[in-house]
Length: 322
Image (cartoon, rainbow, N blue to C red; front, side, top):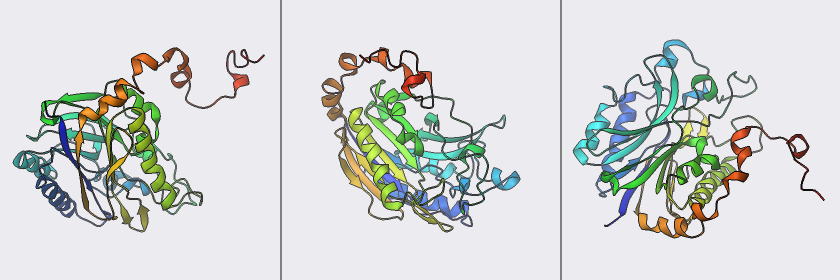
């Protein structure tokens, strides 16, 4: 069976607070059509693709609610789903989800070639803080506006995508090796990621700039794709939104951790790659043959605690010292 999956990343330039939903959706459909003209199977859009990155602002009431989707699809985004059906092309997209019982999540979905939702993921690793920091010009209030994702890290297979094993992450999730490994243990072959990452230190200070944050963004995708023998596609919303910079660096990475396609701008841009899913087997059967080499009995700390403890505070911490 031919297992070459052609995928596209639809990097988006900035979306300002004043931009209308109609204008943003028109940009997305234009990108979708450009990608579909290259005969791709799947298009990946960024995190929170339908709006500006609103967690940088202190919001409440109807203004905050206006950034959330109560249904998916809904009339304002239905044209994107119609586009999938018309072009027979699937897509990943991130958005802010408001559930019928009032819960809020940073969410992503993968939609099939007939416009049907195949899988949903809710972001687990929320960055930022709950209370605004007066000293910061721009905030990072994801912990204020969203709950932690409650779906875990699930994979799925679909004949629409050459029976690839697909998994999803959102933005900060890509920095956490545990998330990748849970996907890897399900034999993942393609990890789809959308992000909106600041071109400055969102927690304040001057310890990080756009160059360093761009390096880290690609580093974590390359390293984790290699360590889990999977293809990965990581797609940005980039540029300057109302004075706040977002990094670009959208890329497609192969199972050896090599970048095979990369965005060159901070604007709306399409990148494309043919993913030979059989290339995953080399790593999965050799260096990262989990059943042969993993020793989970020694990994307990990963699930037993969240923060760090010095060895002297751990049970048996010094027992192997002569």
